[in-house]
Length: 177
Image: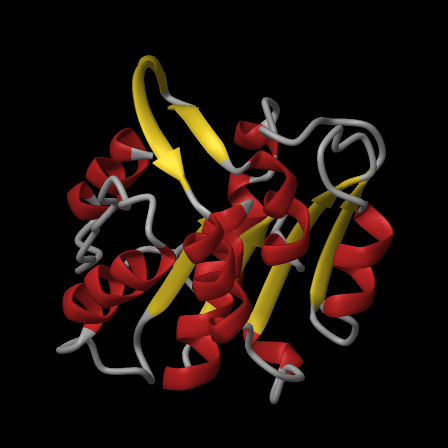
């Protein structure tokens, strides 16, 4: 996405981009996200998240009233991740390991947002071929949102470049500033 951000900035689009490595603790991740976004005006900001990041993006979007783009978002991460307690590897770098605990599961459970207040603030890109999460559950959670339901694809959305124009259009970044 760094190349896309550079291309937007070259076209004169004023965009602030932040994509930190989030800590394993959901509570600490939320604190970091909140700190990064604290000064961003909700009416102009948007968050993008994939999988667990989609859950975090929903938490922030519901609290702040901003737009969100969700890529195969986790709907019930406390339930789904409870069976993965123990030592895990970082998805982007399997050489890095961390401990995922029952306390982390409880942190996820505690931060689950209620019903979506304004579904039109969301774009959910959902792959029926997601091998980790149930696309039907994602579709139901974001009913009323802008949905892009993909036949096939996968959890990582390895074909994301095909969907980037829809993401940029939803965010109003598809035209020159």
